[in-house]
Image (cartoon, rainbow, N blue to C red; front, top):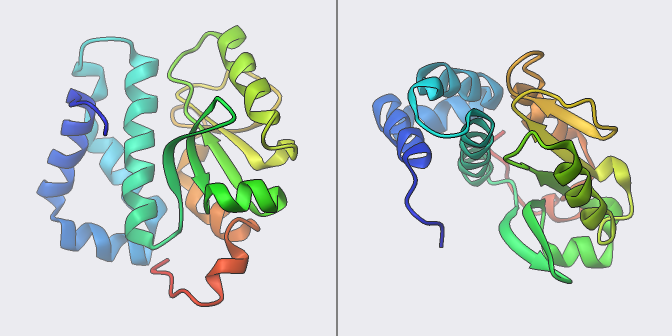
Amino acid sequence: MDSPSPIKDRLYQIIQEITESKAQQEIARDPDSLARQVFAKANLESVGGNPTENYETFAESLMHFILTNSLISSQRKITLEKVEIDIVIPDLKTLKDSNKDAVIILFPKTDNSKLILQRLEELQSIQSIKDNIWLVQRISQGIECKTYEIQGSGSFFHIIGDIKKSNAGKAQSKFKIFRV
């Protein structure tokens, strides 16, 4: 279980302000719009600590909330062959059995390119399809990888749409009703 964090507390405070019911309605209508709204209210600059770590921790927590409420299968904070995975869609079993149908999302929580490249190399040992490893960064470091940027281009706010377009979970989705 995750330890308490002022960043995660801020996320759930914002969701309470919006109300969980309205947040779920917005997720069903336009999950990317909800993500933008939540980030606009977050005021992460006012939180102490490392801004990159704060933004990426907030994005990971928000992503988990949206995936859960979208009924998109995912697993968070798991390990495979001693490699830590932030989020895998749809699940570890699919990653092992049919990695073309699984996406790994990495939230490095650092702007140290060397450390990020090391994590990506570790992830490539368990996900051989490089395009199925997605990197979420506060500001892109220009690393050769499918990257979603929170600030700058704001491409992070389109990630749910890209998940829906990907092969991740297609085999399981035949019998599942998605909210998005």
